[in-house]
Amino acid sequence: MLPASAGLDRQCPGPDNLKVAAIINWFGISDVGDVTEGSNSRDFGRVWIGSAPDDVRAQIAKRASAVTYVRAGVPPVPSVHGDNDQAVPYEQSVRLHKLLTAAGVPNDLMTIPGGGHGTAYIARSTEERTKIYTTMLDFLVRHGVLHAPKATAASAKGQR
Image (tube, rainbow, N blue to C red; front, side):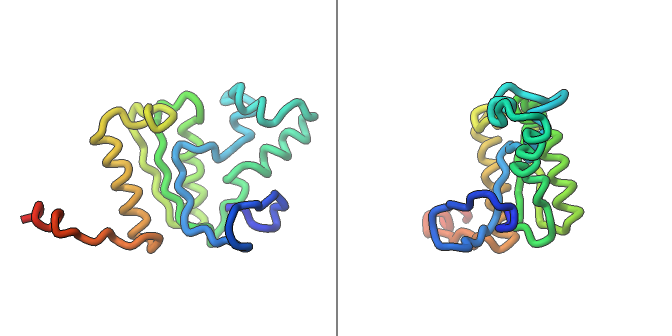
């Protein structure tokens, strides 16, 4: 989501002005300030920001937060987040979803009831993981990021 004007180091491997096709948000932190200060603060959030003065800490958190950069033209964003995530508050993905929708950015929020943080905790069964991956794939195909998978001879036989 970072525009070049953000001034943060953009040292992604690949060509200059790399165009991002989509941003897949797996229970990600979208508001760093929310996990560094206040009721949702977490130890890891405070460690990331360090011991700078409060105004500097707030400025760093804002610059590192996806919610700061939501605007029209951002690539499509599918999100998946468990509503029982103890590391990154689920409400962050809800807020990001609302902001993206208001900006006209294609996005979806897939809520996993009872899901925690991390791939092993968000989906507790193979069926649930399959549903998540299928939903993500469908989103990316629907928004032109990926092409629909071609049927193979083996899969065509299974559909008879």
